[in-house]
Image (tube, rainbow, N blue to C red; front, side):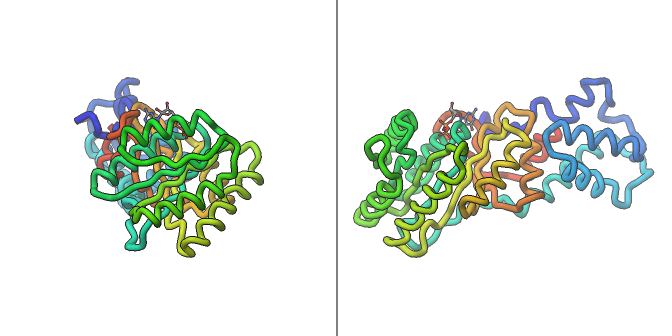
Length: 300
Ligand code: GDP
C-alpha cells in the first residue's frame, strides 16, 4: 500500500543499527547513557530538544536500570510518541452549517494548492458539493495551478483578475457558494510572509467580508506546513497564529522526509489538531493522521 505514510527513511532505529548501534535482540540497560543516545536520535528527526527530552523521560519512568531488548525500546518509544500525538489526530470537523467555509493559509510552496485540490477531491467523493476560491490573486501561477486541481477534482474554481482584492473574491465566492447550496467553500490565500502586516490585514479583511454573508465563518482556518522544513514549521505556526485564527494543521510532504519528528514537536508544543497529512503529489495522496502508524514508521 503506497499511501502508507513513511515519515522517516529509514526509521530512527534503522539509522542507529546502520551505525552499528545494536541488533534487535540484544538487551541493553536503560541507563542515562542509553537515554542520551535515544534523545540524540529523536533530535536528529527534528523533534526538538524539549519534546525529545519529554519522550525519553516518559520512556525511563519506572524503567531506569532495566535490561530491554532493542525491540522493546522501539516499542516503548513508539508508544510514547503515539501518546503525544493521539489528542491531535482529528479529521477536519464537519459542521451542519453550509457552506462550511475553510480558509487555507500557509507560506508559498508549503503545498496549499495541492492540499486544496486533494481536499476538494475527497469531499466531492464523499458526496459533498465543493467550491474553491483562488484567493491568492497576486500569483497568476497559483491561480492556474488551482484551476488544474479543480478540473482534476471536478470542482469549480472561482477566480478574479490578477492583482484584484482577494476579499472581494472571497465575498463573491460566498455569494455563489450560498446560491449554489454548496456544502464546502475552500478559500486559498496568499503566502507572502515577507510583509507580515500586509498579509495579516489581507486575511483579516477576507474574514470580515465573509462574515457579512455568514457571521459564523470561517469555520476552519487550516495551516498547511511542509514537513521537509523541519523545525521551521514551529516558527510558521507561531507566525500564522499571530496573524490568523489557525484552527488546525495539514502537514505535507511526509513521504520521503526524515524530519517527520517535527510533527511530534508541534503536537507537544501547540496541541493544534492535525487534520490530514500529505504523502505525495497525486490527488489521492492525502491521508488521515494515524498516530500509531506514524509513530511506528518514525521509530522504524
Ligand atoms: P503552494 O505554493 O503552497 O500552493 O504549494 P503547492 O501546492 O504548489 O506545492 C508545492 C510543491 O510541493 C509542488 O511541487 C507539489 O507537488 C509539492 N507537494 C505538495 N504536497 C506534497 C506532498 O504531500 N508530498 C510531496 N512529495 N510533494 C508535495
